[in-house]
Length: 501
Image 1 (cartoon, one colour):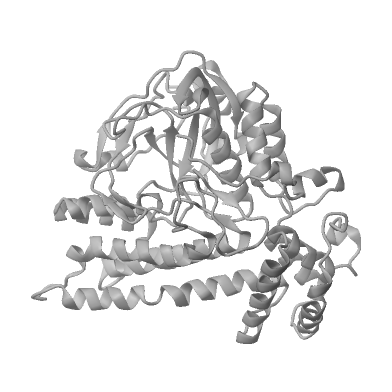
Image 2: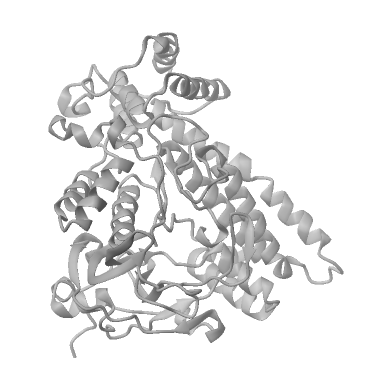
């Protein structure tokens, strides 16, 4: 018997049916593959010949169901810009199933833009091509920069028009991979329903799938909450270290597994400023760059409240002891976040560790970036060049001298930093390797992503595929690709980003 082209081994579909709605994707008229991630497909154990065939394309486009797939739209709730919505769910996405990859990790396979579901709330369930390209480029770049993230298996053009405020746009479908799609909002949904049995089933599934060490704890659900909290602290620290702004940190966009999800109006800072906002729907700046750690803690508070019915211990007459215990854990978030962020900043500055004095060093550096309107990415990359200029080029790579030089105002700070480097424990080779992997030079800059989307809407996919190729090696500068590392010109500035769905 021929093996399944996608080796599905579905577990979420074995949960009770109030967790999802069984649904087939909507067929599209003329699908075409724009980009298929062959390396990721191999990791997932997917038959590459099949994936590149007409049969594989039909599955990626939603025109066919692969053997072993059990397509479902999952239900969840969530706080959106602070306001609770009791039922959201996959309004334009379908979970096709799960595979166990070649590293033994269970991974979801999901289609986005696959048509209307019971959770579409009046929408068409479709996606224009632009959001598909944005998520493909940025999620894969985040993976290359070692940020926990969902990933893109394929981008497909649907061959149909999707109508939005600006009229008809070419449609697209993204095939997305995640360790799971279980959100804070998933827990909130069952808590709000008062369905404690379903809540327990869900959390037991999360423990089994993502945090099996919690089973050995005397209080497994409290251990689960602590593990989710620690993962979020690490994730947000990595965002901050790259100047990444998610844009829509609603509780339905926060995965319990600790991966970045839902690349809607996301963007990367150029000039450093903690108040930076790009999202066109974030009118009050709730999700500004500098607010992201506090918002993550706020989201975790909502998770804690949703989990409370299962945190109450046997023999406890009321919830007060459980509230106090989980509050103690929640109060540890700033400590976990600061510790993770300091590690990231030590890596970026070329330091073996980060003392209190070093924290002041990087805070002063960020203040200078803000005062001098300096590009976040190039400023840190320039530190890499300055720290390692004595190494031969084959060890450090090309310098970005033609792209960026520090203004004179940085001179006193640079002296302090170089003195600190002279006192550090690392040798030159160790420092170069550490700083190189912490300070990318090629980023999915907003104007580059928008250019790829604009070209795609005109039928030119080469801008998208070329940019994706450059972003596969974000740490390796090449002078002939300097325009990919350069900040936007005044005419290229992107001042607002849109969800586009």
